[in-house]
Structures are given as structure tokens and as C-alpha cells.
Length: 279
Image (cartoon, rainbow, N blue to C red; front, top):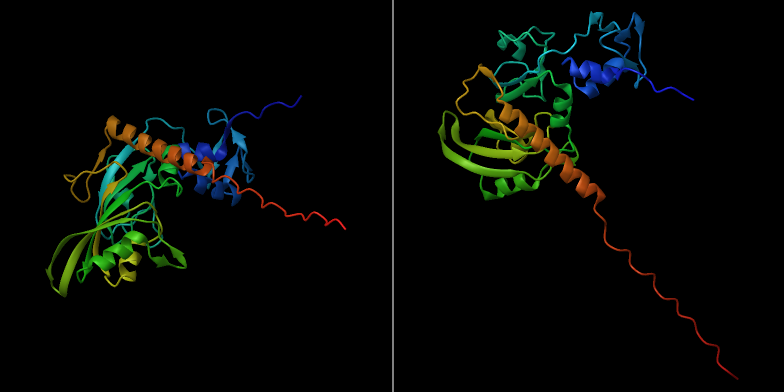
């Protein structure tokens, strides 16, 4: 009788330690960057015991998880949303002056964009929050060139073509309009459920209103109008619970949609048979 494999899947060990999302950890394993007791392990599904085995990523031991941290940062512009940058630009990690835990950003926020960003060492929750099929809402306020009319707002809401694929339905509204240094400008509030690279900027560009300044004001149920740029704080237990509920609702809705019965099959047309004429 075969024995059950022991230990924890390596990608979960790495994600739980806050070093990468589970999906990114799978890539690290396949690239041969993970060792267990001195041997490279590149097969997905491999297991190890963090309390017994020497598990390393790029030669550095994967730390055992202690305290869970859930941080909310108001990212300023000109800061990279990454743990390190080859070009030595300032990163969000440089702003976390007294955080000892190995947290990492949940999703992305462009270098020139600002606003709310979550960071955590809870790899499982981070993976659920950023999974594309869950459709967690992200709300942005974009200052754009020109003032979008109802037609442009409708196009944003219905979806625009980006790189051969239409964006998912969104919510779009005009918050303000005025005169800027380079002409008329508007402020658009845009709620999306995707996380495609530079999506909001590309969407606004597609309807003829390039973004001048972009700020994320809500991530799922989390928002904080009082948090100043460059500052961060721990999420309250109620906020962490709200994030978990939001993901659970999204997962439930996705499962319901995928398992919902389709329309009943149409009955096969009757075949007409002719009775032979008697002679």
C-alpha cells in the first residue's frame, strides 16, 4: 500500500513565508531556484517540512512564518511596487521603515501611479485577492486631458479593446471638470474588476483622454481617505475579515456561474415517414 506524501507543498511554503505568491513560487521551483537539504527541487508537487528540512530560495533559507502582517500603504508616485529594483529606484519596501516581517505587495500599482496598496506575508490570501477569476473591485480616480462626454464614459463602462481583447464591464463616472495648465481636464472615477498592466491608463487613452494623474482609492472593501502618501498602517482585524469575506463571495459567485445549468436541450425534430400508398 502506497504511503501518503508528507510535508507541505513547496510553493505553499514559499508563499506562506511571504517571499512570492503561490503562482510565482511555482515558477521559482520550475526554474531550479529552490533547494531542499542542499538538493535542487524543480518538480511541482514536491513537499518538505519547514520545521525539519533546510528549504532555500536562491541560497537563502526560507524563514518560518511568525506573525501575520496585513499592511495598507498609500503609495506615492515615482515608487516601484516591488521588493527590489535592478535600476535601484525607490521601492515600496523602502517606505516600510519598521516592518521586520517579509511582506510583499498584493498585485501591482504603476510607478507613476499612487494610492492604496496592500502588502502581506499571507501568501494564500494574496493569491486569492489577485486571482483574475475572482474579480475583486479596484476603484481609481483619474485626472485626464479633456472632459469625457457621456459617450466616452459609456465606452469605458462597456469595455474597450486592448491588445486584441475587450476589457470587462466597468463603472465610470465624471467627478469633476475644470481648466488645467494644458487645457480642459476631467476627473473620472473608474471601478474595474481586472488587473491588467496599465489598464486604466490604456482604457482612458483608448477613448481619447490620456491620464495626467492616477490614484487608487479603494481595493476591494478597503479604503482610507485619511492615510497620507508614503504612510502605512496595519489593517484592523475587521478589515482583514472583510477582505476574506469579499474573496469568499467572489469565489462563490464564480462557482455558481460555472456550475449553473444551461438551457434545456431542444428536442430533436421529428422525422417524417411516409406511409406507402396502397395499390
